[in-house]
Length: 186
Image (tube, rainbow, N blue to C red; front, side, top):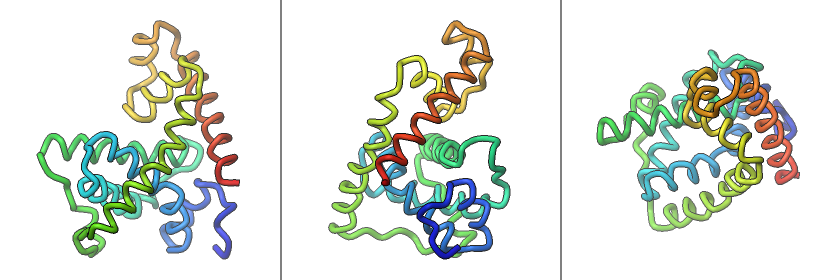
């Protein structure tokens, strides 16, 4: 993939198993948001970097199984992140199975790396700001479905509406997020 800057996330992931440049472009798009996601939740730049590395390693291992159209690539990636975070909290450590499978060395960070993580995580706040700009109903539906990975029936019960309403809120919310994030990249 010669110039992947204009490729959709779906196309990048579909090509990633065979094309390192495609995965690199996908990684570049989501590393800041992933670092921000973890840094907000764990409060430690080193742990956030470890979790981020494991998420992208797991994504690289699993990218052959990604099916475009089923869920947005971003949701798929943050689903992996939610699982890695939950496993890390449950086990009291970051699992490094995917990195070991790929033969990746452990992450070693210098002071300038930690500063870079904090700067990048700040840039990842753009995604969170975009999420915060959604109408409350859409934001709750997107967070519940994408971040918390709850099923539509459970969300519908909690949000006191039908499953089809929740599906529509998630769909509209993700479309608005995608539009806003693309505007930021332009």
